[in-house]
Length: 216
Image (cartoon, rainbow, N blue to C red; front, side):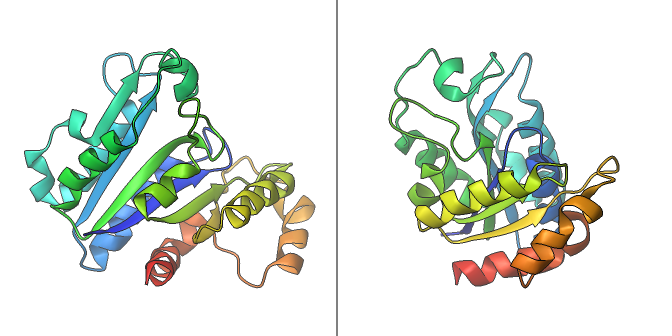
């Protein structure tokens, strides 16, 4: 079985796909065959945009994935850009559907990156949330957080959720050009509270290695 890593974020539009693509490149440089899987994508009109971007990047580094289709990479696709619970019309979703999809992909890779939809507490259906997927898949979790004002609250809430769920995880900041106040308003707290901080753009190789150590 491939090593499984679940990529999530503190909210939507934080940088999950950007981060996952960087991880594809990092693990490929380390000599691993990398696969990608996005169990659910909402806001799909003609095709799943995030899933296609992930598939193209992974296939470039791992040509074996060319035998798959985009529908293999993104199992459930809904046009409404909302939580799966809403976008699906509140139907019950059998998580075994995702396990079957994942098994097909990981037969072609050593590491498989699983990208969630939205954040950890996004409801999949009446009984499941995104935070349930890492345990279901037996995957390590990478939490991507932001550098805007409010990131202290958002980050700590998500870390508490992961701790309460007793999940193995690594986390890092995805800072963007407009996040000009981070070093003044938020970084002092994080450097005081945490011994090690990761930044997605600069520390992706260290993040990749740390995730493997978490799995081991």
